[in-house]
Length: 151
Image (cartoon, rainbow, N blue to C red; front, side, top):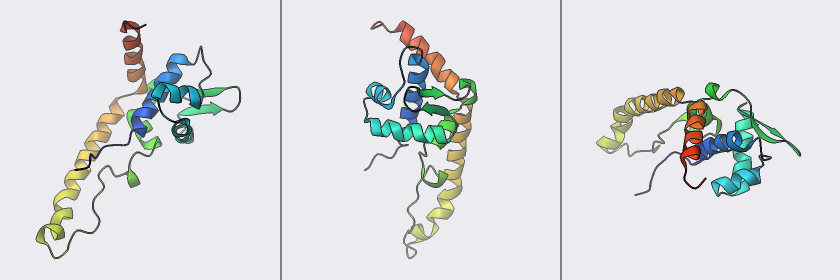
């Protein structure tokens, strides 16, 4: 069975913010720099940077500037990032098979059985995501870097 999960764009976007905060004083934050940290193709990073910029979460200066965070970290939630990078189709976490068999009693009723329950699960996840900010991530990232024996 296929593994169904939220796109890695979300975690890569969080990674981008942690890199910007960690390295912006010493490095120009380019898509190549970020791609090296995430071990991904720079094209993926450029796409994410474009989405985060469009959402007003980062600023990208062409040429000499690089990427920077556009607003205070405590004002950016996981939900903001999740929505910015378009992790789910039409804002729906659960993609439902569209045409269950109407001749089958289960197929005919599955939407009535599941739709409300799935909506509640998604709302709970989004409420939790609103409680976690990038300030939380950056604080934890700094602690991990300081306690990392490889440093």
